[in-house]
Image (cartoon, rainbow, N blue to C red; front, side, top):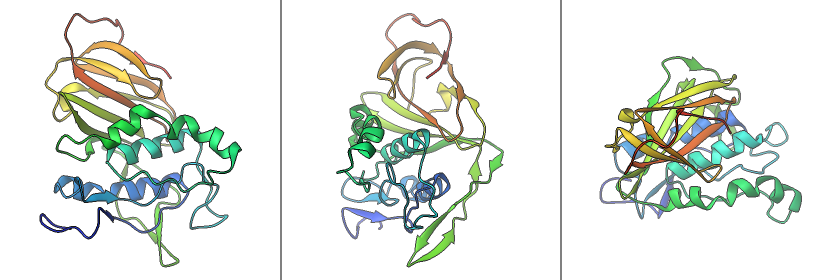
Length: 245
């Protein structure tokens, strides 16, 4: 695609995704250049392949390990915040699988983030200086497994403006260990508030008003946190800028 032409309503940015966290992160990062060039937009969305939520294996067959609940939640949230089409690929007739992923795929607040458009399709804005090695950090093209070339930071933050002065952020822990993830409001593009209201889109809960920073404590390996930030109207309602979930 370019500024005046797009092949379809969306375009593939990668080879086939596999049902593993490494493959998902690799495919996710292929959307970044298109967002930064403003070439992922209404009528021309960057698409890093279908969702692997609820899949026991992917193009790699039985060798693909599938995703944990935390990994599946991070996967769905990441596709949502970069405005990717949300194409389910699991067996929707399998009640056991559907029950295991329903909380993720039926999250109306996250789907609303995916559908919102306020001038930017969503991209990273901050990441760790240290890097990690992810297993299965690859994609498939015409039956051939091809390694991704991008480096993977220990943690990585994405943002997407959703209108009305609100911005959604996704804090991702790519590391093999749990981490505290600190969000500094002044780092978030498009946020003008020093004191901001926060809402957690995973537990559908308002977290009150926070001043300058917020710490998501003990985020497990390959898990994430997704928050809505908006300008505050009144005094702080929460004493500690931390959350456990």
